[in-house]
Each structure stands twice: as structure tokens, then as C-alpha cells.
Length: 284
Image (cartoon, rainbow, N blue to C red; front, side, top):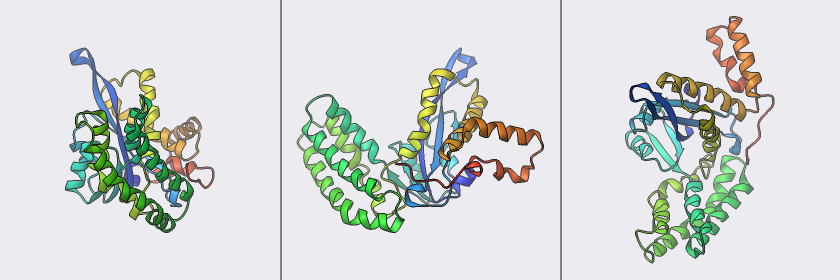
């Protein structure tokens, strides 16, 4: 399924930890589940949404390099440095996530009076308001609206951030929150010029959240091989959910068909999006 997703020219990426049993040390070690997602519904794309998880024993930059070998296009990501290495070595453009920018200012604003963080949140909220109004429109319409309405906000935001950064302690949490977007400014503005690009990577974050929550129940994978099996099952279940397909009914039917001798050269008939009940609408 990952090969089908990788054939796209725009993906979301994220990663989360996966505890794995390590018998040699008598405890667990920390593996990683990398998630790569596609969801073109917000701009009316016809390719079905999906997410593929790939297990890796570590979080080194070589993992996404290996996973995305041959991928050409836009990768929408968080701040993980491994994706920067990928962009430097391959024909990949990074689009960064405004939700991650917002989160840092939100945490500061929640802890007490924080006028700079509060103002930053208000400016970001203007961008999201525009996005909510153009969701579901064509890429051309989205790009036009962003150029006319969002670009002036972002063009004014950068010098404002630089000005505020000069006024605060460089060791403060606020300085860290300001430097985060400034160090990624080009990638944060990539959505302005391409109507297919989202303002954030929430699509893949929503898909990866059940994995993080399930860690408390599953405890750990029994081995690296178990981590790979975990990734495969998670890919099928979360892709089914993205396509409005009941995961239990889907898996039951797929297993039944395989036992009955479903031809291996017709594997696409068993992928979750083949079970989609109706045309899908954009997710808000």
C-alpha cells in the first residue's frame, strides 16, 4: 500500500515511538513508527486517502531517506530534522506545519499573561479562518485566495516576529517559540503558492494519534518483527477509517477472501479504499 501512496507527488509525514521488547537487556527499547499519509479531499483530488506506517528500530535521518527513496514532490512535516536531510539529498520540497507553530505559542498563553504569544495566536487564527472558508475548493481557487488574503498576513508576521525576538531573553521559552517558525519560514509559506498543500500536517497527526494512545494498552511489540506487523495492521486499520470503512468488517472480509484463494495479482481489490462506501468529502 505504501508504494501506491508514494506514487503521489504530495505526502504528509510524521513519526511516533513504538516500545519494543529487548530480551538481551531485559527491558524494552524505543523503536519508531513512521507514518506517511495522503489526503487530497480538501482540494477535490480524486485519489483515495490513506496512511502507511513503516517500523524502524531508530529515528535516524537515514530511515525517511530509505522509505522515500524515489519520491519526488512535496512532503508536509513537523520539525523533525531527518526530513531536512531528505530534502537536501532528494527532489523533495518541505512544507511545514502551522499547527506546530501555534502549539508553542498556545502553551505559553495558557500558562499566564503572555501578550506576544496571544498576538501571535490571533495572527495564526486569521490564517486558519481563511482556510476554513476555502476548504473543498479547487487548487486554483485556494491559491488565489491565499495570495490575496493570507500572504499579506504572513508577510507582516515575519518582521513582527523578528522585532519581538529582539526584545525578549534569547534563553526564554518565548524566544524558542519565535525562532521555531523563523527557522522554517520558507516551508511554512509553501502552502501560499500551491493550492494542493495544506496549512498543517493534521491529517497525519490524526492518523497517528490512535497509535500513541494504544501504547498504553499494547505495552510493547514483542520484537522488531512484531513492530513491522504492528505497522502493517495499523496501516490497514487507519486507512480504512480514513475511507469511512469499518475496520473490523474490512479485516474480516479480507481474511475470508485470502483463505478462499484470492489471486495475488489482484491485491488492489483488497486495499481499504476499494471498500469505500461512497464518494468522500473533505475533512474539516
